[in-house]
Image (cartoon, rainbow, N blue to C red; front, side, top):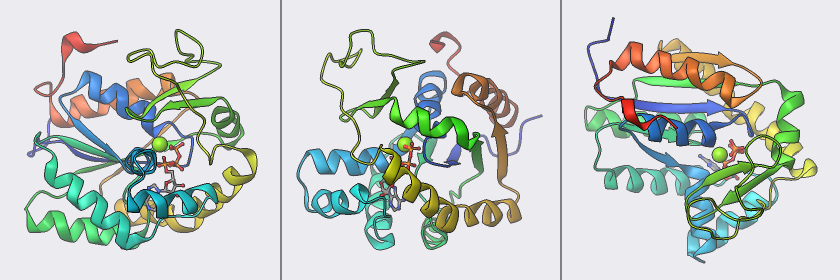
Length: 232
Ligand code: ATP
Ligand code: MG
């Protein structure tokens, strides 16, 4: 049975390397949904040399979070530019302050979040995934040398442009990112579960988790937003 509200306003949560970006790409392919990734947005700001980018680069390189004020401003502006009614957020909010700010902001427009998806992936597998990860910064597309390699080594499948390593994808910084996640982001699980918005999916690979998410979205939001022909 579908819920009363058919519009998708979704948040993806999960530790660094849990596959938020990968799931987000698949969902964009298969559903009529726009996506905002805070990490991708920051990396594009860095690549373009903006003021926010200059500031964020320092934080990201050391595995720290960018300040709540900057993030709230950045994402609120981005949400305003979204034309499609269905959207999904990846990487924001990731602190309680950000979650409260987003809730306040969305309740002003009468369009609150209606689902929070938590990706749960065993810690043993995520470090290796991060070490193997390459990204295409302009699009946010993610490749993995072991299970999702680009068709041509080092190049994006769609544009042919160069892929790069993220400055924070190394063992040392990853440890710090995990710590920050535990301390600042995991409290969001309780925040959203208290509000009955949280569903958790567990698995070791994105291939294993994706069908569970798809099933849940079809159940909750119906087939109206599903692109039957869009399957990869
Ligand atoms: P993954 O992309 O593997 O899921 P991640 O969630 O750590 O890992 P991103 O979401 O790409 O990575 O974020 C990269 C970095 O950008 C973070 O470590 C942090 O420094 C900064 N950042 C991104 N979103 C936020 C946010 N909402 N608040 C504060 N800092 C952020
Ligand atoms: Mg990401």
